[in-house]
Length: 122
Image (cartoon, rainbow, N blue to C red; front, side, top):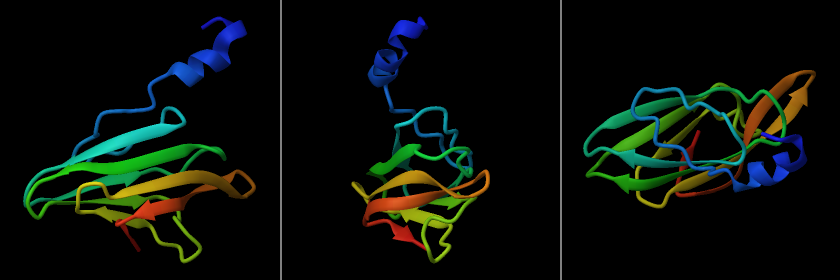
């Protein structure tokens, strides 16, 4: 990518990635990042979200399809709030969580839930 338009190219990049699927680690390869979850019927799916490596990364996760009594629990390698919650559970369409990475010490970063709707955070 030519140096003269890196910012413009970044802004034009599609922030959406495909649902990583059950049991996968969510790879953070850009910011902002949007992940639409498709949750299968009658299953208890899981994902892992690694700790961020820098401040300012933004991540939106939204359940766009949930079959029957399906759910997806995402376990985070860092705290999500001041109560040290480490997981989010999605079990209904339109539930969403908006996260941003923050520095919490020397070379230590954590995700923080900036806003959520319907997601169980614990």
